[in-house]
Image 1 (cartoon, rainbow, N blue to C red):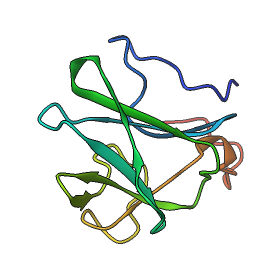
Image 2 (spheres, helix red, strand yellow):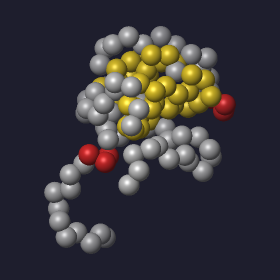
Image 3 (tube, rainbow, N blue to C red):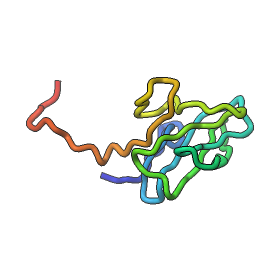
Image 4 (tube, rainbow, N blue to C red):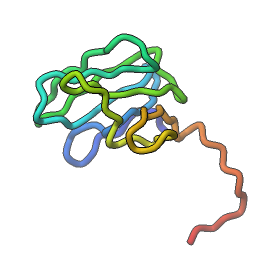
Length: 112
């Protein structure tokens, strides 16, 4: 299985945090904003590059699964609306998840 983020049918990369060989790629749709940044574990803001259609993207080489992050929009920290994990609830920080690292605990399950 490839660890590269796959493009969606719309031509945009997947939303949220996607772990790959170059670190983590962050994508968010925020058409009402001119500037968006990613903040990981209380580090400095990383500005996101605007993309067509109101999307923003940033690649952070040293980002890894398990780190908490926010998007900063209009000077306010917001969780990722496409987050795979919100351990502190819907208003807390998001967590970077690498689904390829998950170890299944149930063997022999044939599906529903």
